[in-house]
Amino acid sequence: MAIKGLAGNEMAQPRVFAHDALDLNKLNSTYTYGTDIPGTQDRGVCLYAGVDIASIEVVMESGTQVIFKGISAGSFLPVLVTKVVSMPSGATANTAGELLALY
Image 1 (cartoon, helix red, strand yellow):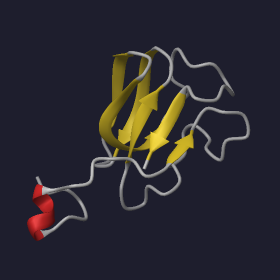
Image 2 (image 1 turned 180 degrees about the vertical axis):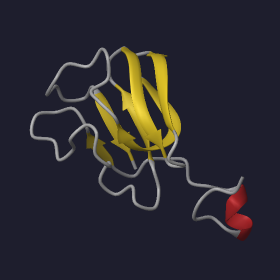
Image 3 (image 1 turned 120 degrees about the horizontal axis):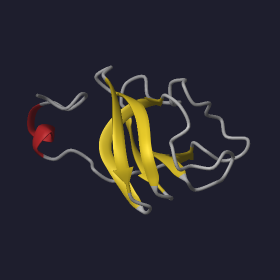
Image 4 (image 1 turned 90 degrees about the vertical axis):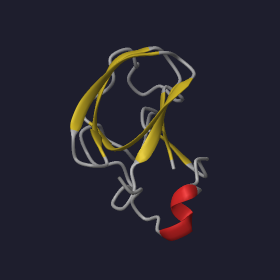
C-alpha cells in the first residue's frame, strides 16, 4: 500500500519526525473528543501518551475505527489517526501533556 501523498522515490524515504504538536487533553484545547483533529483532512497524526492509557478509540486515516489497549506512559502510537472518539481511559479531563497529536 502506498503512503498517501508520497510518489516515486519519496516512497522510500517518508518523513517520520513530528514538526508540530497539539495537546488534545489540556484545558482550553482547540480539540473536542469525537471531532476530527484539526489539520487531518489530508494526513492523520500520530499520538503521544503522557500517562498510562488503558484504552483509546480512534478513527484511522483510512476511516477504520479501532481500539488500542495497554498504552504505556511516555510512548507514542506510530499510526495515523484523524479522530479520537472519546476521552481515553486513564486520562484526566483538562490535564496538559496526557495526549498529544504529533504532526
